[in-house]
Length: 436
Ligand SMILES: Cc1ncc(COP(=O)(O)O)c(C=O)c1O
Image (tube, rainbow, N blue to C red; front, side):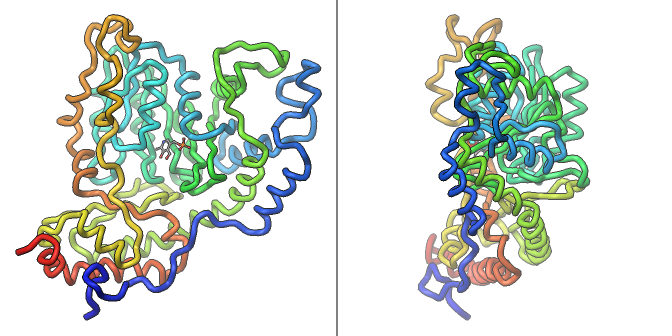
């Protein structure tokens, strides 16, 4: 038997995995065309100074065309492209008019931007644990977290897997709450093929940062079916201007969060590949999931039973050390990486365990977070309320990046070969790393 690579044997993976991002001459041409056109900005000079319609009357920009194509791809009415996903989240929090001291229910098992946008709006995240089998927000626990200060629910479609959007929609309706989808990792994800992210709540956001399934290096967008929300988001990314207003006329306290033409052009060529790339990942992940049924102690997360398209931004597995002779997840990951499969433990801790929570003034009478509140929120209490998310961070989650599943079946077989190899030699690995 070939020894484990971590113990000096040969790697299980011999063929390189696809690299990310994927690009070809069409992407190069799109960027060069913008460069040579000299129009690097989504607006046309001249119209601005003339005080004409702020949306521009010249040739349609790359950014505007991308917005139309992105909205059409997700079967929604509007898309507003911005500088990155975090800014898209900030804009959503402004668009729903959160007041200082308001609360937004979300998951602690997410990238920190999900929490940050709430705190940036002087509001407070309230965390609900994840479902242990899906790693998405546990909808059965949302209602008990609602208080008179709750204004919104913001689930994350974590790893590109739909949260239980229909249940969340019903809860939001019942309690008169806004519903924002953090779909940073979920481009092209749909329920039953006809309803896509962005259509379940008031709006959804995407990130187009370098690792994402649709990328231009850095970028983001808000998509929505609501004309009113779209109008607010458009204005908030554009210094508070309004459509049909004068150029130097500002209606909202906002910022400049516009995307450049280079980003817009590159995202247009990248978007043309997204459907095919999602399908390829779905096919490969389906095969992978079936094979993983034979490996005890490494269980893929459950996907939404009615989801039709997935982005599989991360392929997530739940590691159970008791089925690996006590071998810790972290040693397993070391061995898997040594075999040539890049894999990660993901978040080291939960959002509310970040040092920022202990630096913010959440309690004094002058704190904006205390506006209209009797009692501060003590974030230390959430650890006890979120055991599933805590376990995922500490010992359970295994993340595989989407590009590993963009190749062919032989790439997937290589991942399985590496996992099975470690399984067969778990005792030796345990002895060599931990001792008897
Ligand atoms: C769940 C989630 N929300 C928000 C963001 C923020 O996006 P960006 O990095 O484009 O600001 C990310 C990025 O990784 C994310 O994963």
